[in-house]
Image (tube, rainbow, N blue to C red):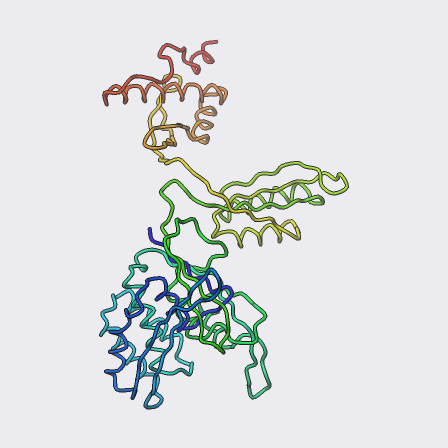
Length: 417
């Protein structure tokens, strides 16, 4: 599946730099000519044109600089602006999904002052390029955008920090942001609304993918610096994933607290949790709690670790995980002359079975029902599964295999002895 990552962690995001980065990624500097023509046809500008120029941004990086020239006739009322924007979206042939995203952005900008032609170009242009490259059919994710810090004048005094309107849009979508020491608004309301509309979620680490191409957008000289990076890639093949390992050392936490923390971590989506005894500072015994989880669950599980254990720090490592294809089915097995339904998990790699495991709860229920040890029930069930596998292989014309056919019944041995 196609993946697009938008990384405004240093640059922030506004409409022009996002559009510039997408032009750089796709390598089509004149792709937006139909959009520019549709804006001119609206009659709201005496002049409208754009230029996308590739410029050097250092020894190893080149980026696209987008310049927009618009001589507008005057301000537009909110309803007129929305109508004009949707008319242009229809003119350039946006898909229904892309058109809905334009509408979502407009809903966020109802209380924002903007330049109509430039905003239409940024909003519809972003959707046009993403639609054209079929990114909406894949996955689009983003790193938290840098906001910067300026002074906002109010009737009750000055407000330092991120612009209130930008914060309001991010809060409406519960979209996280990053802070950088920049005395400028790196992320604008239009940029925040676009980011929320096009992305499925925010991420703190790049997802598992095979990179295909990278694009960079840059602002004109005199405006806030920083490159906006976008990267296209393909998701890993089925069975491969990248997960995170969270670890923390506990030297003054009771076993009861650790046990309760483990329960909460599993309940909140941890794939695995284990505790390793070790020696810490000054040879004190410590418990190393390790949590394996999907990257998307990282922040939530870190919060639980800190809340429940009081730890002051959690180590985070990302690694590649390869898993076998798994399927579950319920099969009948005979134990002690009586048939029971058993849930069985079968794992395979490259189309070949590698493991077959009966569900513990089902084995335990049979052991209680029959009054025999669990290990003997497990032996009997595995014999039945082996016989079933051998019969299936024979029907399909393959070589026989599995457990020897004449082993005694473990359940009968326990009962008769």
